[in-house]
Image 1 (cartoon, one colour):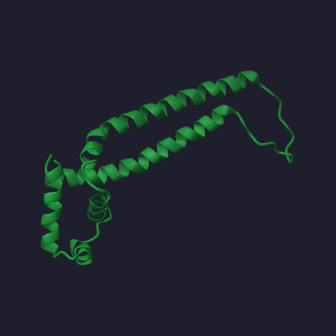
Image 2: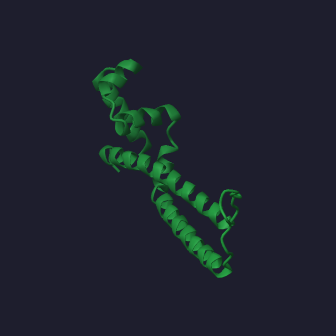
Image 3: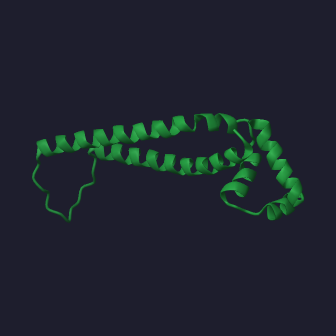
Amino acid sequence: MTSKEFKASFEDYDNFLKREAELKEKIEMLYDDLSGVKGIRYDKIPSSYNPEAIETRKLELIDLINLKQAELKVLQSKYDYFRMVLSKLDEESIELLRRLIVKKQSYEKVGNEMGYSTGGLWKYVDRLIESIL
């Protein structure tokens, strides 16, 4: 993997983290729906009880949960290698990369904050990436 490929993958990885959180939240909501626990509404007349419809709904929810869990596994396995590479970095370095690659902050601005020249920060980031690849 080259430095350029790493930078593209890092941006994808940030999007993956957001998607992973969304999927986990969706799975949790589906489990809540599957549990069948609901609040009592005193302003609504209760509807009739249909056990067949409830069982059908539970089966649909189970299928949907399995589908979302499979999607989550595929995403996680796709980024396992990238997580392993990132584990070699400390949080400051990851945040530096996030600012430059994902948030698209300029090297000049970030370099001034860190006490680097633009070219110096560029070289520092390239060496940082090369050291973990």
